[in-house]
Image (cartoon, rainbow, N blue to C red; front, side):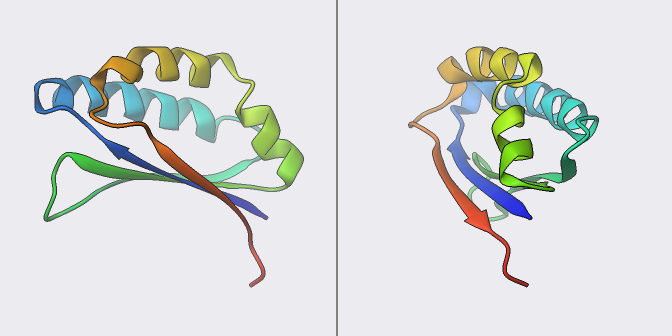
Length: 95
């Protein structure tokens, strides 16, 4: 299984719009054949910080996710909402 974690920091004035856009993208991602799980996490102590957790059946399924229209639209929409560049790491699940 392929896991992708993305850390995001949002500008206060865009918080509500970011959450709406991100939830829409997450729901669309869950409809992808290769997406097993998609979670949107918000930090308790730093409410403008988020982590996206996505689990895919394979490396290829993760690659296909990054080619989807809903992800491209989300990236374009949220780019100006972020206070710093997103950080992403890709993992292969061992257990």
